[in-house]
Every structure is written in structure tokens, then in C-alpha cells.
Image (tube, rainbow, N blue to C red; front, side, top):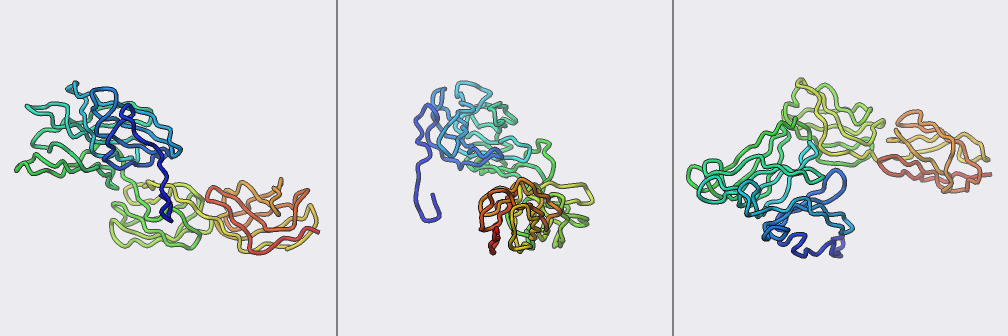
Length: 319
């Protein structure tokens, strides 16, 4: 759905590739959408785990088999895209550990390698509907609807050896913007790095801090160095480039032009009036020097980085 309310059907499920997608989809680091369907698939309509492109191409990564005592079936819950690059989920039923099928916790890779991590039992909760979550301590948490001491459900944790990380509340911005960061053990933090750019930061509590995007920041993960070690961000932060000025403002082909701004580290392209400069040097995150190329046209100066493309407010005149 677009911001203006225009709806586009990406994919209509057909049974073979799953039916009843009750849990939410989650986007992997590769850009694909991953999710589950409660029924459908290859084995007695037991549900599937699927991978879906935003263009509508679907791949079934795993078909659950209700006839198996070690697989689980009916994954009503969605998947957790964990920071180790794998996905974790839960089935509502299957994998009998007593007199009834209680469900299973599982792990699946982007390529579809599937493994059961835990078979539910009454003391540890059974029949999970809700999608699990991953805390910044790396541990997975979930809420089965039944089981436990009063058979009214439990809140569990599952440690699978994933290291702690930090989570960014904003994933794109320009230099000078304040970014909120969640984590654990943030007290005593000694540095926050946006790529190779060192940020000014404020530790508010042991689990919350803020940092200002540095002018020399580069698109990539954010690294927070704490007394316990370095914590990488779960998300990629895009440092959006900005052009503030350039000098000279006119000249013939071959003229060296100094372009100033922020977020220019890692620039991959400079253009004059839409014509690509063949010679340019990134001096720092705030300065790029480019030579006016043959065929350059009078127009805007643009610089492209992994964070986007910056366009000058002024016009460079080729004379």
C-alpha cells in the first residue's frame, strides 16, 4: 500500500505455495520478504515457510509435515529476522512430546535449511500464536497461549548464542541529525561510529542513548563501543549526502571544482549537468574535488554515495 492508499496485490496464495498467511511478513537483509502460512504446502496442508520478492516471485523454503513427530505444523506465528542472518519461528501444533501435539520452535536459513530447536511441552508453554521477538541482548522471547503452571500461557526466552547488538530508532538521516539507540550495557560507552565517522553521543541510561550523525559518517552499520565490547547495529544506517556549496561556480572543461557538504565519504559518482566526471577525489566527508568533464553541461552538480544522491542548489556554468 502506498502512502496515499493505493493497494497493489503482490501475490495471491494458491494452496500449493501455502494458504492462510496469518502471521506478518518480515524483510530479510537481502530485501526479500519472509513469512509463514498456517495451512497449504506439500504435506496434508500443514503450512509453509516462504520467501517472496516484492515483484511477486515466491519460493517455498519449507513445507511442514503433520505426519512427522519431529517437524511441527500450523505456523500461525510469523518469523523473527534475527541478527545472525537466520529466521526463527514457532508452530502451533505438531512435534508430539506428550499426549497431544504442542508445537515446536524452529530455525530456518535464507536457503531453506530447517531445524527444530525445541519441542513445546506444558511446563514451557504450548500452542504459540504470537510472533516472537529478539531483544537487544540477542535472546529470543515468545508467548505461547497455553501451558505453564496454570495452563494459561507462559513468557519464555530462548538463547541460541546470538551476541548482543544495538537497535537504531532512525535508519537514515543527514549530518547533525540525532539518532536514538537502544541496547544493553550502554553505561560507560566510549565511542559511537557511523562507518569511520566518530559521533558525539549522550548516554541517557544503561539501555538508551542518542548520537549525532557526524559530517564524516558513512552508510553502514553503527558501532557502539561499551566496556563489554563493541555492539553493531541491527540495521544499516544511510547517511544522506548534502551539497552546501561549490567553487568556482563556472569554468571550462578541465576546471577543478571543490564541492563542500556533509556525508560525502564513499562518493561513487559526481556529475555536472548530468554528465559524469571521470576524475574526482573524496578529500573527506565534507569535501570532494572534481574535474569538469568533456561534454559537461551547465546545470546542477550532483554527488552519489551509498546513502543517496545530493543535488546542489546552485548551477555550475560551463563556459
